[in-house]
Image (cartoon, rainbow, N blue to C red):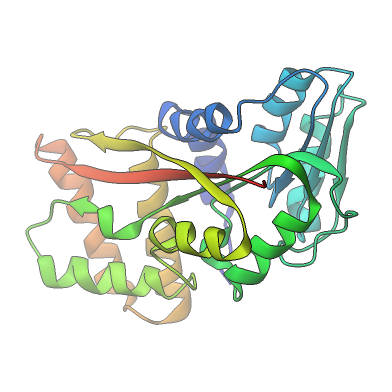
Length: 258
């Protein structure tokens, strides 16, 4: 389990409001295409930033339900959405949603499926709670899309391999369409946004990943503290020298329940 110190928590809050992750969130929002009066489920709602945007879009005639198993995440989400009486948060898991059959118009999940032990079960349960004609959007990074400049490729490979250990599936966007079709859903689109940069932005996705990857590698012992720190220091030096480059792609897979 990745543990956040105060500085990492501060960086995360900055990054989640920054341009890179805002673009990622907008990809998910636009693919969901929320309409006034709809009931929308946010699976793995986290800190509630997307939940709040969905709430504004559906308005007081609609309903937004955030489901997340972490009380620590639900607390800030409840605060963020406190002015929306039509938002509700529930304790629950993606493959055991605390909702009735055919109870929501749309469901969305962002950066959650990569952590699930049973992705097919989560797709099936999302399909269960969708109304006929309802839409499921699953938005995740395909980590094979990562391009990250380094002068020590072997060390970079070890850091990426260590990071891979913290999720169960690095290729979610590629495996989702056949899983959705097998469940009976009709795949409608696969949209994407690529986050690329040649500078290390204070509010960017890259600096967030650097901090998280360094912490995780050290906490788990998968990479030594000296090596993880040297990896981060190299990226900071490359940025200072004007030689930084980072790129990764987020995909939003959309399917409809016939």
